[in-house]
Length: 250
Ligand code: PEP
Image 1 (cartoon, helix red, strand yellow):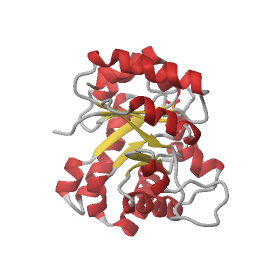
Image 2 (cartoon, rainbow, N blue to C red):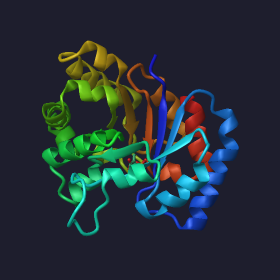
Image 3 (cartoon, rainbow, N blue to C red):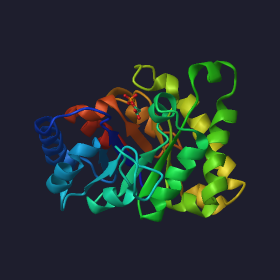
């Protein structure tokens, strides 16, 4: 049985006061969330305070990105061991915004994935196609390419200590969600592709869906057999919406 997870990606949002209200609200509403694992990924600068506030909580915290390098002359970058130092358990790698806006290639994403695992962080590997790629029937080709780059570098066994998030780019921040059937079909494809290398690893792997998930559509999405929770952007900044999504998963 795969334990569902709901992860909030705050992106570049939040003051300390806003983050405090968000974390406080989530903590207060947790009683209604039974089973799901809950993670929040604040911007780097808020990680220390979030770590302090969530110390001892069942909510864990993680990074939105990390450097592929361990340390050194990389101005503006943050390493995996720095995230670990502040109690992060997970880190998002290969978010479509990183790929599109910061030119992260499949190879860079694979290196970041490996850098995360090398310091004990669980990478949440984001994969997903653009609208043009979907319309050209390239969804599976693109997702396979993104997945294969990581498996080639890190090995199939590494997926045992990772999470995959399927995030169709056309559904991120657009209000346009994949239908439960569209999402399930890609999730099943991801699992089947990895099962060619290890059925056990594929069966255990948690695959989250991300792309305009909100309270109103979460239950239907999470009800699909290969959808093991969600990576939530916009709705993770609203306490009530986020908690309702957590309840839908839990
Ligand atoms: C995301 O950025 O990972 C995401 C899924 O965003 P949104 O929920 O806002 O579409």
